[in-house]
Length: 503
Image 1 (tube, one colour):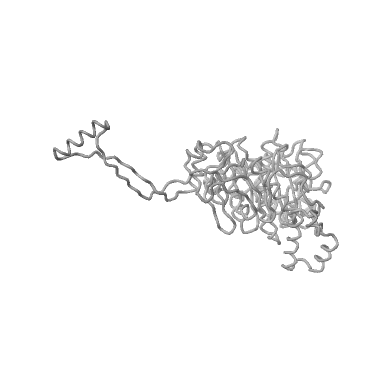
Image 2 (image 1 turned 120 degrees about the vertical axis):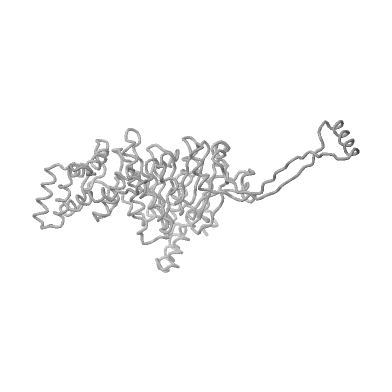
């Protein structure tokens, strides 16, 4: 009845359909579902926030198919005939293979791609279908704050929420691995297969004893002192461990003290990176004593909408480090969720300095975990050369926007490969007359046409050519357009298409 009266929104329909799927799968009881629908009508089974729609929508959404329209396939000879003029939309079945968009500033990455996708994912979260974390610079056009359940404004003293530096885990080894990836993941050498294991070992030698003594992990100032090897904090930690009889953790602390100051010790590098967060602007943040409301990515078991604003102005290095931290926590926590039917997505509005060897391996594991990431880059030069091929190979949906450089276009041309096409070669061969009559006729034709008599030969053959060459990607993509290839989680794929993002 409410649907007939126009009181039922598309989000209500999607949310109740999702709840009914939970009844059929056995997660919810039929009696509870029936009572909720009879009592509340189209407002049944509400999102924890109580919201039934977003404050504003800018894109065209279809929650029945779960898609958001981002453009139209151009009527261009380079697009396959079946796709020309067709609308193009994205949904969780495509984002589950992750998406990478590359284009210079002003090419439309945020307005034409990130904003519609975040809107769509927030609508899915209100319907109980998805959990979304959006990371971008403070002031970026990522939607109003009312469209999110949690807004973490790092560096802003008015921020209600804090960010959990350790991802909500209580395991020192797991916390050390994630934190090491955030601090020095960009320093790992992909050429030699370098990783962050040494850094993770150093951190675990300190996090384990500290957690055993204090029942929590150290804050930023405490961690910096421990990594610097300050004698006071280390001596105090040793005394408390000895009093508690923690002999195994004492050996960990002894090993850390023996390594201090030795050549090749990564403790100093870690301390320098932690010092980027030990600034007055970040003093109220990353607190582990319980005085703040930290957000942890462990909460992605629920349909939550989160936005994290990074303080890029004046703290660019710290922002890149925090973006690596969020990505590392996301790839570590999402695969161990119990309910993988809840799609989880991380949107990084600027992934410069975020792509590391461990990040690429983490993205490869997301497809089977019901999750995906959306990464945008101004240029592939922001990714180390040895990682560009693995990154493009690990991600199923790839977008090259207008204004791409030829060397960036070369990487896309290689990953999109070649296709067989029909080539027609036309040649004109001059005809030589052998008889006097033939020579007379040829002379007459030359007088009339001004050209020597020729015969045309047409050769048709199959050749293999690039779908999109580096030169075409750099110079033949009009403004407001992009070349986009898609792959679904089921393995279905579409060839690279020229898409009008304004249509």
